[in-house]
Amino acid sequence: MISKERIEEIFNSRRGSINIYETDDMDTLNNFFEENLLEISEEDPVETSVVKAWRADDENGNLVGGVCLAFREGEYIIDGIAIKDNLRGMRLGEKLLDIATAEVRKRGGSKIFLVAKAPEFFKTQGYIIVDESQAPLFYECAGCEQYKVSCFPEIMRWEDKEDA
Image (tube, rainbow, N blue to C red; front, side):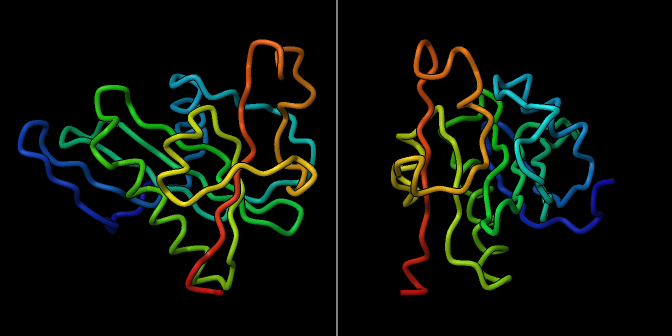
């Protein structure tokens, strides 16, 4: 189900408007993540609890971006984030991360972890690369035969500077 309350409207005159809504339709969001080359495992290594998820729709109601905030092993994680290729570079990923970050702050959290195939983008958003020993077990990569052979994702962490 998509919330009827629009979280934010992003307008770009070249491409129309994009609206961000809260959603609990994780099947659609996970399919979108997979279509945008994120691997989604049916078997989580540890129990995961979705906190909230948001979707970005274009003016025709087509899903063009999304983010899932989850909680594993006592830490907040971005359990998926993707933007349609033709909309990358328009700050939609930044807006989705800002919404997830605001939710973490609202809940009293001060850190978010993620696994990034595009670490340069996340560095611009204040995330730093950390050793896997400094992160909770929240990713399936380590069990994949391609991990560190042909796939080199980075484990990253954001810490709230306002909390310090």
